[in-house]
Amino acid sequence: EIEAAVEAGDLTSSDPATDAWFVTQLSMATFHHYAYVTPTDPITVVAEQLWAFCLRALGGASNDG
Image (cartoon, rainbow, N blue to C red; front, top):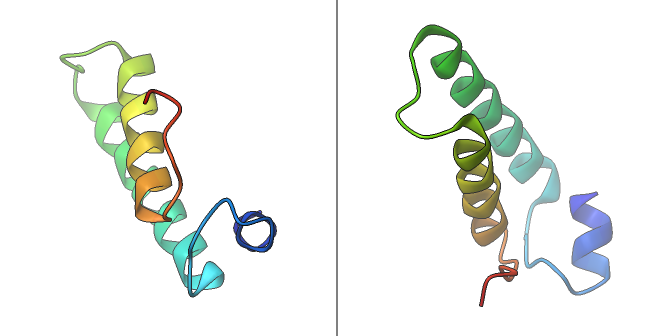
């Protein structure tokens, strides 16, 4: 999906395979962390923050301005 988004001009990843690995690892680490602690924010907020971070890291534009 990252490769398709790069081809469509929506992302600027120079290495989609490695970026996909990093996104997967970060997502798993975040999920693992919140499996053992009580979040201070609703989990939906945490998920939105995680995906917004990943989108920015891949050179995508956010939908919130």
